[in-house]
Amino acid sequence: MVGKKAMMKLDFKAYGHPSISALNKHKLTITKSDAVHDDSVIAVRSELAAADLPPGMKEALQERKKISLTMRTGGIEDRVDAFGSFKMDPTDPEKLVIEKGDFAEHDTVGVRANKAAADLFRDLIGQMQSEDEEIEFEIRIMES
Image 1 (tube, rainbow, N blue to C red):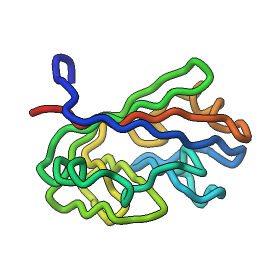
Image 2: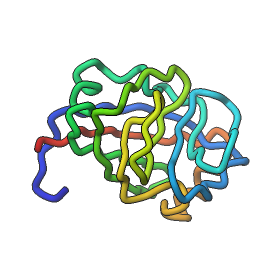
Image 3: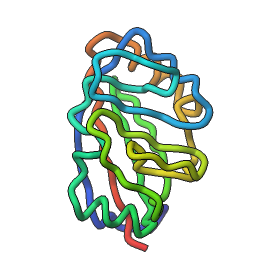
Image 4: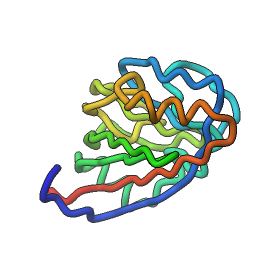
């Protein structure tokens, strides 16, 4: 997405947890829960879930705009690029999910992603496995 300008940006925080494995090869999940329920979870106690996205951001996702999710902690940064989908209805009050495939449910905010949880930098995941490690997230919706 070099040369693309962000038309919308949203920052939020979540936290690490010792049970994070980030081994899922198909998706990544950020949850408001304080527990890790599966191997797609990369952060817990999130300030944001799919339902919390501003209406303009939800509309842009349904118009198939490009999305990037950047995550930072412990001086390490990684980014996931994906696309919105007309199938999206981001209304889940607990989770935010990005999928490598085209599958979209009420927690999905990105499909056809270039990375899933298992593809993230392992040094970053190591930091995310620390109890109470603060993780900074940034969602950007890019201009077409």
